[in-house]
Amino acid sequence: MINTADDPALIWLRPEPSGRKPRYTRAEIARAGVGIADAEGFDAVTMKRIAGELGAGTMTLYYYVRNKADIVALMQDAIFQDVLVPAGELPPDWRDAVTLIARRTRDVLVGHPWAVSSLNQAQFGPNAMRHYEQSLSALASTALSYPQKTEVTAILDDYVVGNGSHTIEARDRFRAAAGNLGLIAEATAYGEELISTGKFPELEALARHAREAAITGSETGPLAHLDTQFENGLAALLDGIEQHYGIS
Image (cartoon, rainbow, N blue to C red; front, side, top):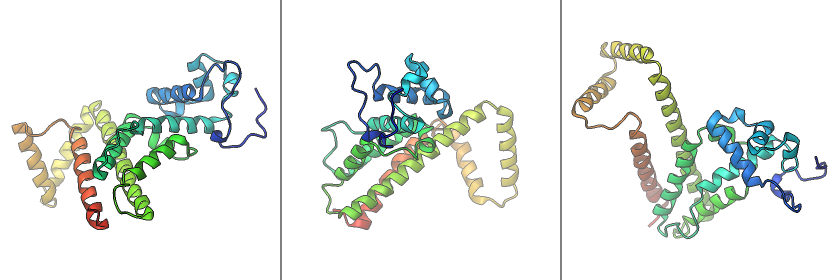
């Protein structure tokens, strides 16, 4: 293991090993970590586990990274790479541009459900910078000031992350419930008992609508509405942003 005592703490300030033929790259290490987290959960990501995935010794990995904080930074940067809109493909219209970024961000978050809660302390890396650059570039055709652009970007990020988190939770609850049909039956009976008291008129109407929709087949699967809900919410949010900030 090389001596890194005088190296900067920020991994992005330390060059990658530049020997004759480094066996691994940071990108390979990051993707190994992401793959483990996708398959087994974030807690399974360890230096030893990544080394095993790469076919290396654990001590060998320390030649490339110093600790798990470095690994987390690399994993976050790999995920942001997937969020980035490819060069030349960002639409000129601001609504189209921020919509594309929002969709890609949500897709990546939902595709890596551990990321929202596990990578929030990661070191800000180059792909995160590129993502923020794209987010500001999406608003370049507007007359917004830079403080307004940062505010709008934050509003959109809050919506996308919140919706992605809700989607992940709903999917997890559905999967858990599907494996416990007895619990579903009990919860349904309990809910119907409460509604029958007449104290929940709006929920009673909603339940009636759900029963009618089930009979007519007018609604899709139990989770498909989440995508439609995201699109409708994003459109409504952009309408509000357009009106509030006077974007023409």
